[in-house]
Image (cartoon, helix red, strand yellow):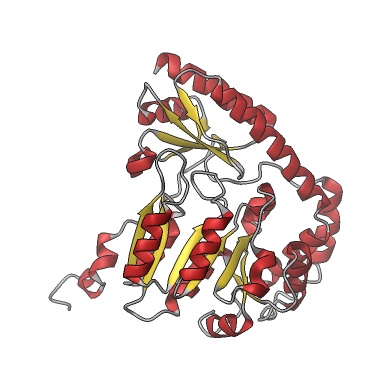
Length: 361
């Protein structure tokens, strides 16, 4: 029998971490996870189910996901000269990127940003450095970014475009400057590209150290867990050595290929979400005690100015509306909340509950 706790087998950085927490959304209006709130039309569902009959469940899936890769290339305008790497969501791609780095490598990202950049880096024992955004605009603090790049010499830089959780698009000239001085790879994370009308994909043939990462989750396929990375083929060939075989299952391959080849209804849903985003932002900006920020994603960040965000969050939850409380992260997110754009009915329920929370909480 072991004479010491078996947890002593784990690295100190693992023991010091907290697991990524996903809130239980049962029986709530769910506006906390940046999901598309709309389902599939009945007619589309029936055609899709016919396609699923051809899935060879007794066989391993195509390890290269060739049909799906072609659909992703066509629907996302990926240059023919660029390589493509698929992952079980963007999370796995982030993990693959960092697993391929040396043990002493440094990873840099603006903060606040997508929490998995830091989470994965720390879990692998890499050196992680966050650089705070400008407080007044959530733009990149370029003098600070350039100074850290010079001193840290990071192997990997993540730039979310638009940024999560702030929702804004960084100045593209700033991103180009970072690409020009970065000693390693720069990943432009375009998870919210369907709502942004902005992309660096067309720059891939001109920037060897640029990698563009996307996901189908925000488009309306979150349940499939599919992300992809596009960039220089030589770089992706090395990353592919780290990728586990058969990481994209056959149901995901068939379903995602089908959806991307019939994506008219998904694009229509995206347009509706963007229109609703404008209406929700205008409504938030009209509410006393709320400071709401413009967004190029499918969510809106807002701050409570005279009531603590924690109290407002709990009032909303007690009224059956679940959003994301970012205030515990502190810093620029003190008293900040994030709401996903839902259906018109869900959005109105949220706004009604928020007004009630501000008056009565």
